[in-house]
Image (tube, rainbow, N blue to C red; front, side, top):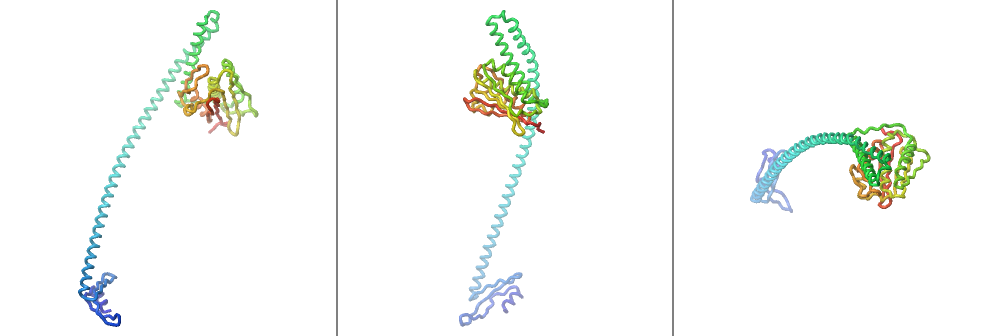
Length: 350
């Protein structure tokens, strides 16, 4: 107790001999102690020499710990410096990339404006060219009809063949011009619909009747009967829907063989009316399906009478149907014909 009191009072006590009893005999033990704050550090040995060696070992251990701590602090400092340098490099890289991205976005916005201007100019040029071509083509077609009708008895077989070629070619070119006008109107965002309440069943009946006359020239029959119950009246642009029907029925007749049939049907289900046009032609090759409704796409199949295609008809049809809030698709297997279907909402979509 006197040793501990001396350590507390003086802050330290060294080589203090204390007599203790152990194993039924009394022996001397030498103590040293240090007071530090609320802690007492005490060591003991059997002799003063042992106590001195213990002091030396503790000093060595303390120095090793101090050196290890210093090394750890130094490594920690170096690591923090490396991390700071790395963060600085990352920040600089991110800033550079952000500046480059901003520059690219500005350039892209500029290019988009230029592309829109070029697209507008292209549509204007196509529209002007189509309008300028339409009238002379109509004149050529009307004059060839006049020659064939009024000068028939005076014409030789060669003359009739030439006039027939003129009529067929001018008719195709006039169709191409009309398609170009529609495409430029759609691309320019100027497609408008004159929606009026329409008896779709009657529209289909009249359209099929007109197309039967064309189909008869190729010995093709068109099957149609008004569905029961009758189709509901719908708000439609009747002219545009007739354009869709003419294109799809004409397309079916183009690929149908003489003596085959084209089936037109319609049915309502829920809030939709679906119209289908099925032919008995060669069908649509699987490779053509992804591009079938894209502008200027060309099917690998050819018309059975050598009919030409503008490559625009189905793209225009899709835009017309979608403008009405509907959708169009095709179902086909090679060698088993093709069925084109489009659905229209019974009520006008908001």
